[in-house]
Length: 248
Image (cartoon, rainbow, N blue to C red):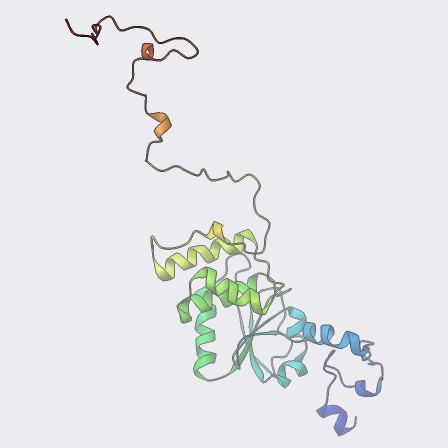
């Protein structure tokens, strides 16, 4: 294989072929797409940059493209799915979470803090890059940046629009937020934010106008009913004497 090809892997599939000349990849069959297709394909091949020159978020497919990761300066990988294999142990420093049900946020954050201290770029990935790995990124932002859950979620969502947290994962994040910040009456309820999954239609609609003030229409009128006669002449009051207009 020629040196030029080895130094210039395909930016889409990561394999070595003369993609710029339209040559089909002998490994995966990839060809260079038309100009109109390039931007969308390239954006899917690269992980999402969450924090510049440090934190990247992606899928297992992103993690399998070693040459593309190297081209972005990524040297460490945080694998959040125990069933996913670490493919390039000779090229990257891996750290894997072992629990496939509950995310070990503190364990993951400890590894990320080490990467940050050593100024190393790190990729966090799960299978699709939609739930588990974004949750770890959100937990890191809460713990290390001091951002609340809603702000952290929105930051990640703005940079990777495909994020869709499951209800189980979002619940773990809410619990972790309480652990990091403690109870705070100023915290906005998590139900006020959409974490990428459909809202539960069975949730009762909140009642409005539930203040303690009493409506003026709830207070009885302190006027005898006999003083009102709708549609009839007023009844004379026997307790009031006739007033003489002409004197004695």
